[in-house]
Length: 233
Length: 233
Image 1 (spheres, helix red, strand yellow):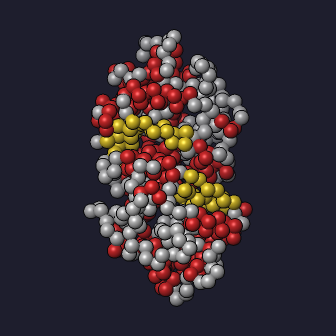
Image 2 (tube, helix red, strand yellow; image 1 turned 90 degrees about the vertical axis):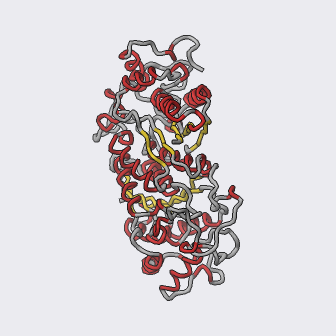
């Protein structure tokens, strides 16, 4: 089966790409990165480098206009600071949603990936891969990462595409450490990835995604290759 | 409740807008039009005119990059001719899908509308309205218009937005004649609308949407106000 893999240039989507290439072969895989108004283009450079590493075609889609009115601190226009501390420490809405939730971003990216998939692989069955994992969904932090959401979205994709687009979320029941283990087993090029919400030369080490990434490598007993000198693209 | 109404400038979405304004008042409603690569901008002019008529804010989102590889004849880049004849007469794939199906367009537009809604009405419950109706779904012509699809997509929207975005599809069990009746009852400004797949000065009268529109007005025993001299914007 063909595969379109949503690729942010981070750990989770790079693990997905490693799995899709392992399963279908590079010529049957396309990576898709979405510009949603993020504060920096650093992660897109990583997404490009990872796609090059695997020799898969890569498309960047700019959907930032959708979020033009959105005040989320992850977005460049917000002007606000990115919250520091792990997800567990972040201030949440009463419902549990964290400040870095970008409204329905995964729904939008999955929909765009399904439409894109049917254009780039016409008439074929295509897996639409997303790297959402259990830590992101925990406590309703990111409602559009939950298994319930992914199940419903998967049914919507299948029904709305005459069953051509099949949602694939292989990490949805894993925590971040298990994701890193799966990627290490496949030789995923983590040295090329970028996770930090900030766009500096080096990861800030203080935002939620930096902290969670560091913990995941620590749990696997290996250093984060992106932190080693000359590790990043 | 607030409302974001997907508005193409045609009959169905204009009827939805009439209903949303009736229900929530113009100040609580925003209209959203999506550029997906359609062959002409004529329908967007109508969408603008309809939004002005109701005094609701209006946003145009360009998502055409998503469909850049798509060969659908509705899209400007295809270079192909728009099929003539009613939907019932159109050539279909074995599964029933018609040539003018644009892959997962409604899924993409609903997702974009949900993300947009939460930016423009932050913290509020927002209805995300779409004018899909039963004729479009008949025989699987447009799989992303079926009630099954809309139900699943509605659940995905609710789950992925912490229940802030609620899909509203008031026409999903109506045929086109019933849609026109509902709009006529509300005084919808059909004289401002555009349905034809072609972008000429006057509707072609031969494409599926022209034929179905004409039949719907005939069934209601009234002339199509957009065909009268000086009727259109």
